[in-house]
Length: 243
Image (cartoon, rainbow, N blue to C red; front, side, top):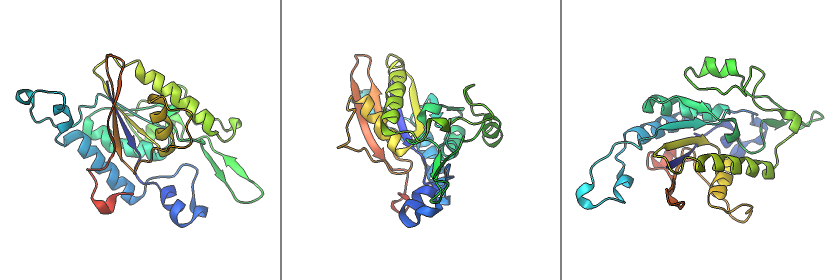
């Protein structure tokens, strides 16, 4: 099984982290750059010449292969990943399946900076996702009331790592298959997921940083071995579009 981890495109919060934290949103959308990045990564995974397929073949068996051959596409229920998955879904002619456990560390919350303190948000509900993203597969656990239960408070990093372990365990169940699975997820959760897959949890000394729409490939081999192929690839972006 081949796993492709794709970070979402640039969001408004990615920009506010650099310029002004007071502009942060609980569930930020993509910026104009983020939308362009999403379009470019979609074209890349669907249409690029995939020389990685040649690595394990004899020279006489090598031939040009277009795209990554992705067979399953999942995304988190956060707005920026839903938006990033849209052009990928269209380019691959695959439905994007919403997987709540892929959400970013912390859940949906915002520090209001006043007497209100930290306020939680439920996120987009089933009807809202279906309306804004027709064709997406929305699991029954996401109701019209949203997908994030803020009664649990702000998710700590240990809980995020526990989610990553659950996701990794689910993915490993496909190790004997020929699936090529793509996940559209988030920076910190991608770090936790990679560490879980590579048996590096807990680990606070190493951080796998990914650029917006950077692609990482990890193979789950039938013999039980985990083979990282490449990390944080941004060949689909011009230098000025990397963020």
